[in-house]
Length: 258
Image (cartoon, rainbow, N blue to C red; front, side, top):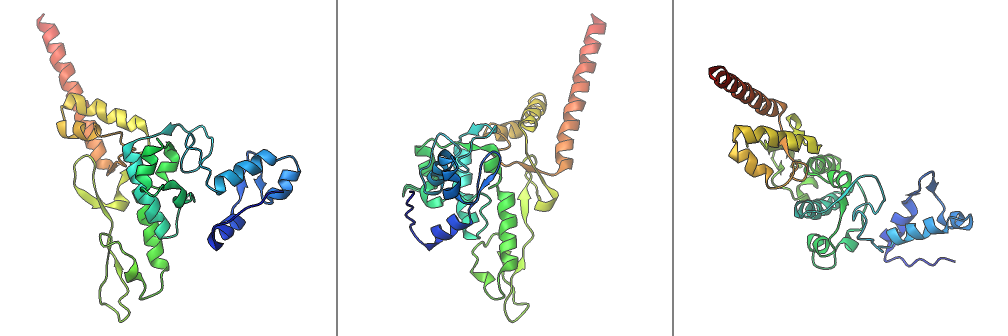
């Protein structure tokens, strides 16, 4: 017999709605599944749901996957801030129990103390772009007159175009990682691979672009959630190719003189 003690009605509802996925099927009725010889899967499910967090696994999903585990101050900072904000708009992409990510010292401090690890794919589900979209959806679903209670002054403003003071959405803008010029968020791309990180280093080094190199030294472009317009990245590539051709031409002239 398995006895489960829930803290409140919210936990009961989350448990009833939760589906624990195994490699080949979904355990819709854990008790019956356990009687069929799936006791270990059941215990694993209860441990995950009831908060026996394994800090050697991804602190977000607690799953074993092929995605490499990472840990960094930048990741802790982003996750601690955005998990809370996703929770506020009821849009957590992965539902970790935030109470159990916090040892009363704050999520970031708890992660740091536990040397928490996370999958890069899990971290990306909580990035700023996805958060802004979730906040925008949340605003659009709120009843007229209640939207002003949503506190995100950098993204929304309230006008008096109508009697119910329904807010207008302010266009999201973000600075380009490369040139620092602000552009509408929808026009920007976000760094998704480490290949881009190395490519930028390879370009910035011969160009002696100290500003770009300084930014890259603060962490990889994925951890920093680099955003850029395609034209700006293309300009960097073009400069690097032009520099390479110039260097090769100068080298060729020197060899001819010899």
